[in-house]
Amino acid sequence: MKYLVISVRISVDMSYSKIQGGVIMAKCEVCSKDVHFGIKVSHSHRRSNKMWKANVKKVRVAQNGAVKTMNVCTRCLRSNKVTRA
Image: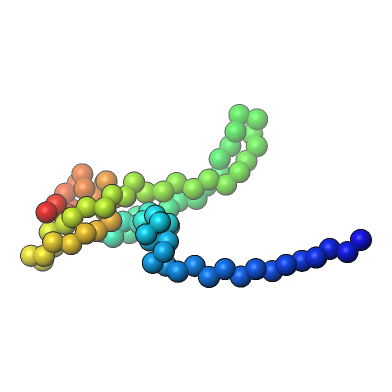
């Protein structure tokens, strides 16, 4: 029995993934909080991989006298590390 193996290489444009809400969105631009990885364990103790993303919001921020849109986590918003415009 013969098998046919096909290798496909896909190139992803970074601007496309940013528009579609890809991995770039899950990083805070103030504190650099990013995704965390761990293991999800079910009741029957079957283990699988799990990913926790940071709670990131797109907000308008006043920075150096200019208004700028940034991705900021809710912890930085709550602790007043940035000032909203």
